[in-house]
Image (cartoon, rainbow over all chains, first blue to last red; front, side):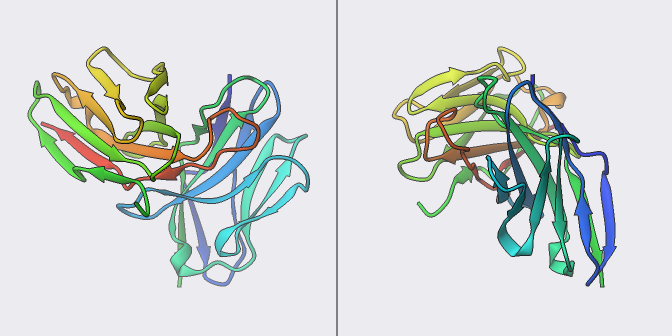
Length: 115
Length: 118
């Protein structure tokens, strides 16, 4: 079985400060990991993914994520937050070797960036 | 089209009514997913199509839920005898590749259909 946990319902950060949105996962095989963002009344938009290789993945809008196999984590980061980054962020996992082809999503983290 | 289109965007149904939600995926996308997103929750998998074949319907919550994709493009999610617990946003997503193929498939989502059952 595959699962993903986002331990924080909400993250608050001041504009210009670094931000981190946490994600941990559980798979029986090798993970494919994703981050999506959802703005109000919009569908989820892809930010970045980890398949294999470099543990630090760079994505859209200046976001990056670090894959940590020992801690089974894939935290989303950005060096300097913008007010426009305020949105819902979803982490997702797919077990590449476990035979599942359906991504499982976390419950989401609301990021609020204060001016 | 340029993106995944879903209609209607908003639907209010009385308990017991049948509803149909439509998804127009990106042209040429082989794989199509339906997810249900309850308020304050992440998307929960409902069903998956590869072209016109429904390969996985393990996430459909009851036999009142039915999905089809008869020509391998447009898909319809039908909910019969709606109940209040069916109130949610129904998300459709498509991707170019065959789900499960080598490489990680990135999903393109529609804006969703928000269903409210009174």
